[in-house]
Image 1 (tube, rainbow over the protein chains, first blue to last red):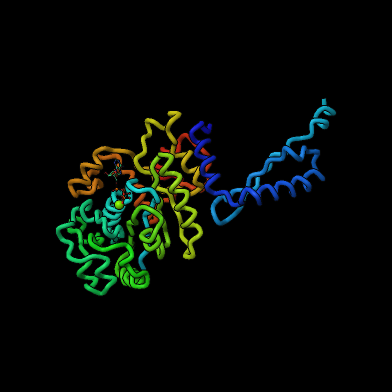
Image 2: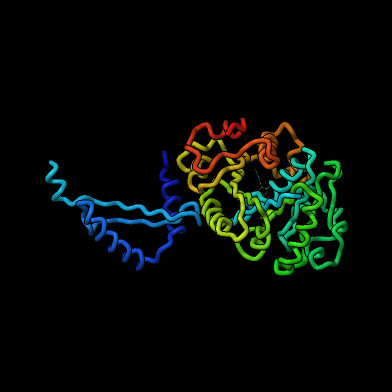
Length: 77
Length: 265
Ligand SMILES: Nc1ncnc2c1ncn2[C@@H]1O[C@H](COP(=O)(O)OP(=O)(O)OP(=O)(O)O)[C@@H](O)[C@H]1O
Ligand SMILES: [Mg+2]
């Protein structure tokens, strides 16, 4: 189980490996939000993305947290 | 043709020279021809750790400047029946005094004579580091279970993986305290491997007798009863191809230590 310490270290390493400037990241987030919302009932304003370089030069990794719209969740209830 | 291996770390004082001295000796005791090169120009140490300082007559800078012959610069270790040789660093020059092209030529000559050419890199990621890692085909990144060392190792790994000469890269965890591995303030070997995503070639325990051996100029591998000696021997077996390393992204497992010891992965 990852400890608080490894979580902290992971955050530091992720930050070090970051590949986009804050401006580009905001821009990408906005564009992705527009595309993703065509496929998922998501709350565009709450989309959270993270781009890091994993395994160094071999690949980028994009993770997105896509909170579902509240209205959709209410429907499911 | 010899294999060029560099030991590097980013952060200083993690045990590169200690491990080069001991792994070099251990490879030599396995009857492979090995030369260890101290590239910490200006801060020469490897000769002392191995206990050969009195025999050093010339150094790597002299060699790259054609001020001496290869024979002048090579110091052989009798205790290993001369299977181990050392090329010392210069104590009076600077890192910039090594010409990369000339260094390449020296390495080419050494590749003809030795099975393994092991380079002890200086700390940092500047000139000395760059020259040390440049021609290596295998890089061993020494890391301590400590956040600053892991962060620096991560930075070095990125530089190595982006290098224009492709390298096989491994982690070597040093000064490990297995007894602390479950503590919340300690970073376990499994966590280090998971964070850095690089195969691990070995785990060497923290042992205060390492300091004693370093100070006496007798590499600790000669003390076969020490568990650090067995751990170094395991790394040696992997370098000379007898066993494999723990794979990249190995699934977290409590028995990682046991696996390393049994060389089963
Ligand atoms: N496994 C170990 N257990 C205990 N002490 C160790 C161990 N490995 C290394 N040391 C100690 O750590 C210190 C630093 O070791 P060493 O000089 O080999 O590091 P280094 O990475 O080469 O340093 P530098 O970056 O300055 O070249 C020494 O005092 C050495 O005795
Ligand atoms: Mg050193």
